[in-house]
Image (cartoon, rainbow, N blue to C red; front, side, top):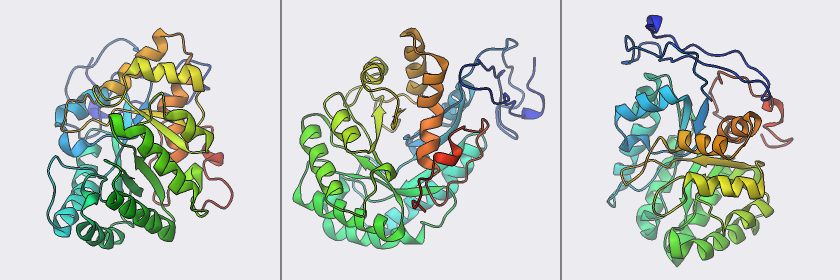
Length: 328
């Protein structure tokens, strides 16, 4: 059958214990309009990719993600593969995130949200970093900007620590959510402990408003034990695989845990989220668990943001608890 008029067909909300089905769908005015969709009522789990760098991905990736059930993405500011030499270069990049990429995603029926910062790798240049931090407030009132991120550490240097703390300070002054990048490979454990200690040492920081990303088997427990949200990044070389992420779910449960693809310009796969959902099913996880990890948990965290403007196709049962008392 053809997908008439390009309208996304959305299943009515059903409790997690009850299966729901979504036929093949495309977005209104999408380039997908007119493409043949499946005639079978094929089960689709709607999902959100909470960390993906779509500025470095092809439009074909949006097509595949939409067909797989992706309804929203969150894109943190990151390293572009080369060091940028001026704050004006970041100003242009921030415009790309909050203006162009948001519109590009919408044309495929995917809601785009973003985060702003100077990333951990370029943060070693303190004068440049301070210039960039000074322009971030220009963009914080844009629709869909969730907060400050992905800030963090790369090689755990003194300069990186200084700029991390200054960006936490900005988040505290402007009452923003924080998304944290933890280092790669051999620098991860020490860097993660440094980050957790700095955040815990600032009494203004509320752990339920901070996402510690790229956790692995040796860093997930310290972050959860301190009350933070955590992200398991399904990235082939420097982070973890879908099966390893399922291992962590089986050990630590589903509270304050989400997964993401972190697809970027490197060797990465924006379809790792659907792969993760399939791995969960293969390991016997039920619909409630899959729905919570893929959909409810990202919503619950993001809904604390002042400019959260996503209209979920499935109303989350946790909507009223997403903003703890006094969280703003």
